[in-house]
Image 1 (cartoon, rainbow, N blue to C red):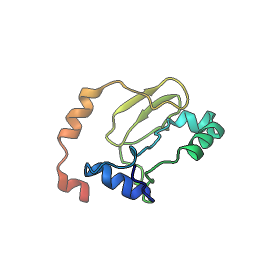
Image 2 (image 1 turned 45 degrees about the horizontal axis):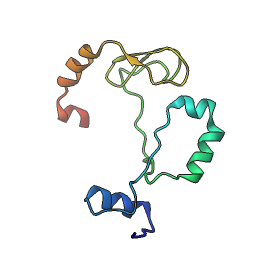
Image 3 (image 1 turned 90 degrees about the vertical axis):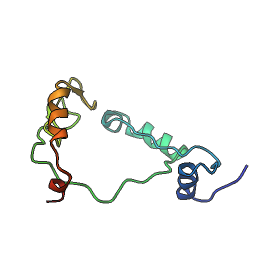
Length: 114
C-alpha cells in the first residue's frame, strides 16, 4: 500500500482516479450533533480527521434568507425556499419545492455577480 503524507494529495489522487491509499473522508454532521454531542464529535474527529477543510470565506445573508437555520420553526434559505424545522439541530424539510425550482430557473448567471 502506498502511503501519502497529506490529505490534499489523497483527495487529488481520488479525484483523478489514481488509487489513493484510502478513500478521503469528511463527516458532515448535522447542526444538532454540534449542539448536543460536541464532545463525542471531537473524539471521532480526533481519531478520524477530515481530509477536507472549510473555506475561510463565508457568504453573507441573502436578501430572501430569514429565520434561524436548525432552530424550530420556519427558515427561508438564500432562494426564499421555506424549510420547516420540527426539532432543534435538524436542517428541516422543504415544504414547497416546486415554487423554489421556478425561482432558481429564473436566475441569470450575470445577476449573481452584481
